[in-house]
Length: 539
Image (tube, rainbow, N blue to C red; front, side, top):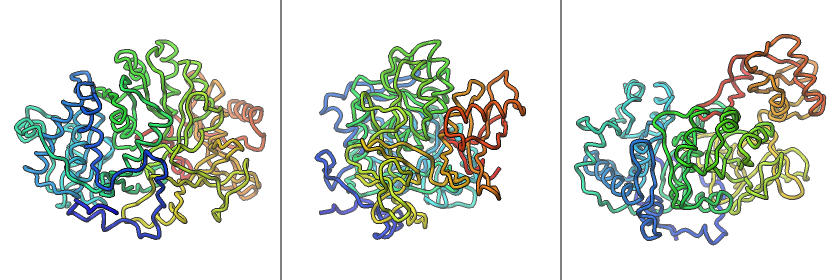
């Protein structure tokens, strides 16, 4: 029996997809049998002392380290500010804006514990993009890093729904969240949310165009904690987690906050954005044991790992975009670690295909995470034979729920989620990424995956990074075109074009070679590091 909702503000509930467009949810495994009334922050934070974690560190940064008990007290004080001073009601959306920090983590936890819906935004968004999110989510309140207020204030003009903007990290400023919270008692009863009440709206990263708002409930998030972290990552209470993904991205929210809390571990937040060098140095300085970042970042960090070493690190997690084998091997040579790869989706909250340890197989992402089922299908949804390229379809304890978006019907079909990826599955159940479905290049009747060509190019010592797309062609339908960034000391001329083409022909099937190569100084990427191939196609 489903528990009665505690969220009086029904804005998001009333804009869920129609029932016939919802993904089928499966909770067969014992750990996924969650109660119908639960609050995910109560489960992850308030119950920590009973597990013996109350005095263990949870949030770390250069100025301070907070234990689970201290985090709970601060979260409770913020909850009182939200509900007593700012009038936040259960179901209200609260826009959160800031870089990864203890302040942002506390604010996020407080909003959800008090029954609100967290709407975290990427720090680099400009006023127009923030305005689009406000128009979509209709937040009544914003908690913002003081250094990021300008763009938010610009976006707020002519949007009266956003009635208050409160800076959260200015301890000496009158009216700031820190000053208000310091005046409150540190004991707050969590909102008695139903498991299917909404915890967050996660906006997609925009690799394929206009971002969408993915809805996740308290049950969704806790189910995700009981899937990949339990069965693949296997974090421990003594782990210290670092990484570059923003908390506004579900890869970062899970990896750098919620999954450490599930395991009794701690997360470290630097005082500014990471560079590849500073990430490696931070691993040394804080004794980090788990790291999350995107393949591009690992590739850039590999020389520093080789030079400085990463003695404490035991797990390096790659997700967010396809992991080229060239990058996997480069990191392994530099660090001695086999990359733990995974594919997930904002719509599914986190990783649903992955393998670790002895289960890792070169060239494959891994197998379906326990709790999920995945298959490769044709355009009609029929499973294709092993070794055949098709579309990935996934079903499990999390699923796509867009906020009032016609694209829901394309993502969910017959209860299955279609993340938009082209895959091959082998006879042992391993899934091998080929390309985003809309990035598959069909040239003269051949299917060519852009990432495979990128991987071949990246193995040439002159190539720093690259992106491969299909370019319309009258004779072949499409040709393979590469955009390459060369390493210092190499010249992008006709001789280099031929050198790289010959290199690809010698590495993979010759018909896959890039018939055009354009040398560029940089590639378009999202704030989370994903390559925006749609911009390359437009170019």
